[in-house]
Amino acid sequence: MNGLTTGDSLTIILMVSVKWLLVCGICAAPSFIIAFPNFNVPAMLVGIAVFVVLFTYVNLSQAYRHAAGQRPQLRLALVVGFGLKTFIALLGVMAFSGFKVFGFFSSPDLIMGIAAVGAVGGVARHFHLPNYDFFLTLAATLIEGLLLTLAVIILSAVVWGMLLLIKRARTS
Image 1 (tube, rainbow, N blue to C red):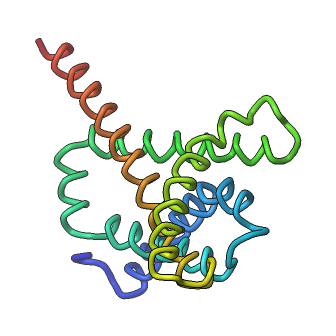
Image 2 (cartoon, helix red, strand yellow; image 1 turned 180 degrees about the vertical axis):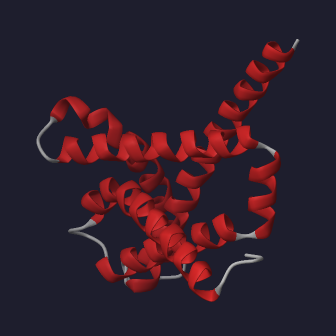
């Protein structure tokens, strides 16, 4: 963060960290609600914290800042992708709060969660590991978060492509 004082840099780091804490916390809420009674809660919280730290690091990295500065459509596409995931997660939380009409919106978390738990459960059974202790729950949380992040990246790539097509159409 060239040209900034230490205080400015810390403020930026704090603001970006809080942004990702909110996004990751909201996006994780449907899965957390589903898994809460049966899985290790501290492990799920550590998994969420890992994503907060990773997204904060990427967001503050020179490579991301350069790419986002050179390609504003990329930044917008990522905002749309993560914004849509956050909105869907909020609707999923509403579904668990009694608004059954929004039940569909917990589907991404449910599908990715089933895949993650299935993968970790298969490994646990193969190696005769205890059911969903801290490390197995952490592994399932990280796998689910990775799958959901990949889905957001794919969505963002589609949005980015559409934005580039719109830009090209406007300039020709």
